[in-house]
Length: 296
Image (cartoon, rainbow, N blue to C red; front, side, top):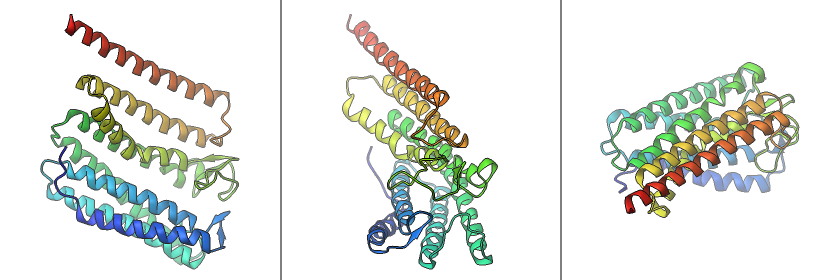
């Protein structure tokens, strides 16, 4: 589909995050300070990359709208401001040598965390509104429309997966069953000794890139398949991706590390994989059978 115009504030945020990604990467290797068991600049580096991808993808999705209304423009601006506040607090707290998330140690730190919490809620609500606006738009390409809709929907689920980090069994923490900052996987830092709610949040959030990319790949490399088959495959992939996000969050809430699943977790993942693969096989076979019937 032809790209019309890009949302300028989102693209400015992309440019800022690209610069920040480079700067924080340098900090990881040049600043020997450690915070919660990891290089102090590693967290802002990861957030910079994630925000860059999110903002770029959102700008692209908005460019697909046949008509971009003012409400979409201002909702995207709200997202930019929310992410700017979050990143400014994260960077500021690193400069001060302290944590940004869940930090209630002083009145200033508590105020900054509360500001970040409000920004996160604004981001979530704005994301939902953008999703509704995009889904209501009549994007002519049905395959692209399905991929975009699924990406927005599952990424909203990924945002919701972050809610237990500030309530429920993991109050003011992303680790369930151990303190934050313990042993973790390289780069991402996901706990290797307890449950980690960041995993489901990360996987679900990046459906915003994965599912539209899958739609593009089907359009580009599966030319012989019918449009109906491509849509069915996308729906199956979207359902599987959403279920994976839920399962990863469920595993974390049980205090179980990603790399040490128990029998129940393995069974659940096995059932999910079997259902998705079985569904894909059935869809492809149905497409081939329909082709044979048309050729007969």
